[in-house]
Length: 160
Ligand code: ADP
Image (tube, protein in one colour):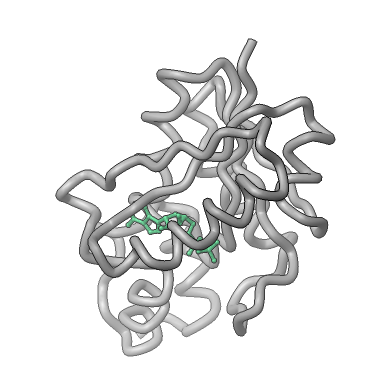
């Protein structure tokens, strides 16, 4: 029984994140999408909103659970009996940061493996911040994010 944790800000969750979670759940018994509640960046959605959007958007993925945490990622992974950290990698631009994070986590917890999934070509070109920017300017993001996120962004930025 392998429990994998997919940690992130998910501000908001995108189809790219969901693709990684779905693919990870084909390999691991349980994938916990874990919302870090105080990332070092300015957030659009509160922790409760990010968790609620993830829950609504992952109903079709039976092996995916959603949780929140505010400790070191490796401590959280241990607290749920996990042995794997899942992350996604879009292009070379992600490599530096993900490599650094993986090295740190591996040093802190050599018993936890870090598994990086290459993003599908359909999802390599955008991030949560791209989605927020397009939505804030009134653009259509329904091809980038699940339905509940489209609605939440409309509530934030108003129907235009
Ligand atoms: P963080 O603030 O921890 O980087 P994010 O929510 O931005 O949290 O991203 C979480 C993980 O998902 C990261 O490993 C990131 O590279 C990956 N990711 C983000 N967007 C995509 C995408 N479009 N396709 C695949 N992976 C992605």
